Length: 357
Ligand code: MG
Image 1: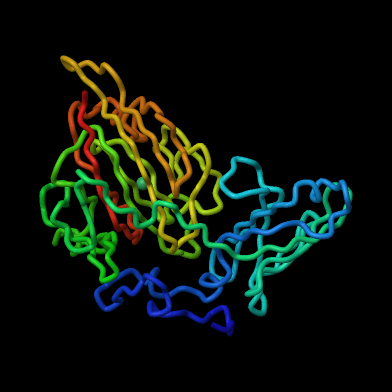
Image 2 (image 1 turned 45 degrees about the vertical axis):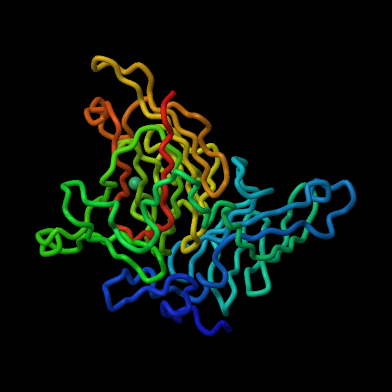
């Protein structure tokens, strides 16, 4: 695919797995994507080259970068020693699309991102050193994983048989031809009146379990923070593992992989928009006796294969409202997917209930 102008919009036909039908009302976020977001946005890996012997970057050669879409034609670049680490970036700054390349400069760093990769140089540690990186796709090791024996397949792309809205009404979300579902939010009062939109949840309730799900968020240029790619996966109905377009963000307690407003992920393992991602979760439900909590829920979460919570205690319901936190579920509860007005897609969801001893 050749670069023409940054304003060129591609149709859904060019999106690898997003062969969604715009005519059915699927979000334009999935059908109109700037070419530079298709080809230049995302993860890069490479190394410092030509650093003199003994130089910091000769000893610490690896270099990784993220090219993050901000709005059409505008990007943010972050450079690290390696992906999926808590380290502060070596450099962070804006880039602009000019003539088919994203150019950036600041703080002694300069370079360009093009179809051949990301190259540039940095004045750091007493030298002016070049770097060369190539675009990479770091797919989750559990993408497409098969349900183990004994698991209940909750969604395999064929139907919503295991799901309903909270009130028991039929699911109004989109079932797509690519084996995924897509959040369908109410856009008008008319939509709301006719029961479109809202969270969906499993008909069945669960306690201790192992669960796998896959999700992805659209690009949504020009939107930031909690309004971009927001959804959530709830266990026992009320404990949310946040889903958010957190690509290139810091990994705070309200971003992707956080136990919402309770604890941040150990690292921010969020991938670029449009890439399929995974949560693999081991959950131990709370135990109650005579209306008293004996033990809180505990959770282990792997995001794209990266351990981000390790048997972490969930001290209260993940509500940002303090009154809401006192109303904890005292028995099994459904799994819930959040409609937060962003057109996220989900696929391959299964659960393996774990029997208590
Ligand atoms: Mg959420």
